[in-house]
Image (cartoon, rainbow over the protein chains, first blue to last red):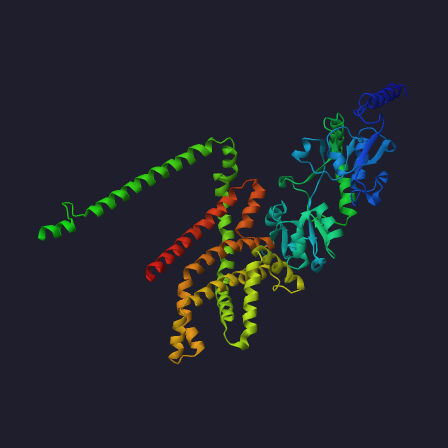
Length: 270
Length: 284
């Protein structure tokens, strides 16, 4: 017992000091002790469920809370604000610490604002037209489909090298033309990044369905989403460290599986 | 008399007339001037363009040997799709074009609707840009709910090309038919041939021969326009080059595609020129 007292003391000291000195975000946030996160207005499924990020439901909402926790903020210290795309990318002071609304990291944008390390890599997903919604999400079944894609995207090498369809694939100039081809039943399926595919099936192409997604492949130069911050924000290092820790522990993958695979019902194609 | 006649012939020692000597000197001078100016222009291009500040970047992204070597074989493969579409469209265009030309030439009052149809056809398909026709027919007709394989973009894209090019080809045939002199028809009719025989045996053979060079130009244009089908799906050479461009962030594949097109179209253009020149000589 006597032996345990100093240990407990040391532990208590360590914890306290970790919180006091190791709290990397201390004094760097917009409001001290609070972590202000911006999202879209409205915020969409499956990124935020029911436009209510406070609940932590939805992929981006869940990631925001996990990052906050990792940086030492309680869930009650996370403050949500809304922002438009233009507000987020215009240079100058922001009314948020980080902004999460599927911002793809590009070098051009990086000149104006800062991005965290990517918290999501958009995988390729299979969108099928009304005639092929019963297709099983297996490689064998996918090979037999008539395929299309936008010619300038990384979907093309994926199709050619991974799926290797039995019939000639058809390539189009933009998403609208792919829609037309699906509508005319000229193709059964098209390959898009998952968010685009979800949007198209929900809003643009009646009767279509996203039947599967591929695990993101780092060699494809994929679309990566980052948290957007004011240029030169000192918080970036903390956010990056938190994201690295979440990636390390597998927590980020867990959140992704929960909200982008289980909730959207888009299974992983093996 | 003898002396003066030899003067008129003007045969000097070299065996050439003064006029011929003068012409030869003029030709030599022309060749020298042309050579010098060509060398000057080429030197200017070869020396000056690489001096521009952006040349290195342009060279890297448009004339990249490594990228060309990597993509060229696949571009050639994709060109087979162009050749295929061309091969089945060209004969159909010739047939439909001739039919439309004959429809427009129909003289009988009962066939007036046929003439109207021919005129409307050529008006519409010469008036609408090819790419629009390809789009509308390529996506529109299959959109009516045709089952596979009848909704294939290859079929409807080809039809769009066939309709557009038939309109032009028909006009050329019509010009050829009109170019056969009126008196020939009259003469043939007076020999007891029917209208139909006159057209088939007298007018058409001459008309077709007269328009061969012009139709050759249409063939060359068609070969190039096959690439427009890439807009409705088929992965032919232009689309394949575009895919490589996106993947490698380099425009050299487009230059490769242009080289392949030129390899086919330059000989065809030369041949058309030859036919044209030959026709001019024959007519003199």
